[in-house]
Length: 203
Image 1 (tube, one colour):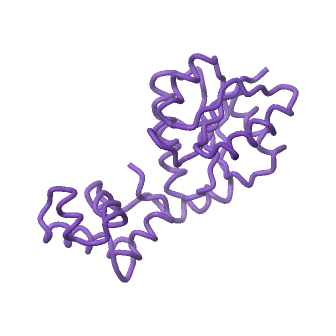
Image 2 (tube, one colour; image 1 turned 90 degrees about the vertical axis):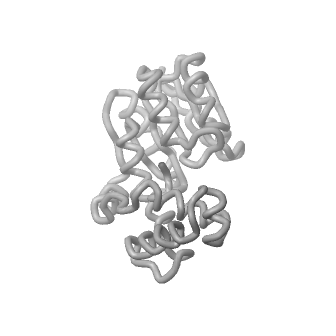
């Protein structure tokens, strides 16, 4: 029997995934959590073999949770199961030690098959997303440019970003300009959208 942990901040999605997987004779959901920072302790307590992780969760995102699992509880493999099939997320997930990456509209039978392969020690990635990730390439943004774009997404002005990140307004404008250039955008708002779509705004 393969023991599973399901981590998703949306209770309805989490419950649906657990119900579908529990229908398989060789799979058993032994833990469910709604926060990324609860994953490692829950996986250890429940002796989970595979953790299915959403990307966007409070506490820790799923990619950071996969990194924590790999470092602190490597007996449990991680499988990213997300709505956000973004090339940058795939690259970050694999670098974090995740054993698989699939999108949530994967048919249940295929998801169960992926879980079995991950439990057996294989690395499984959605082939279309893998091809797209290779085409897009790694993020061209520096860590500071990413931080500025993230803050701009939340605050909307260079002045507000400067206050939030303790930078001069001119420095913020320089980072925004670099981000616009590297994403091929026409303005900062479009740069944020493109970077988010490509999965470049996660740490």
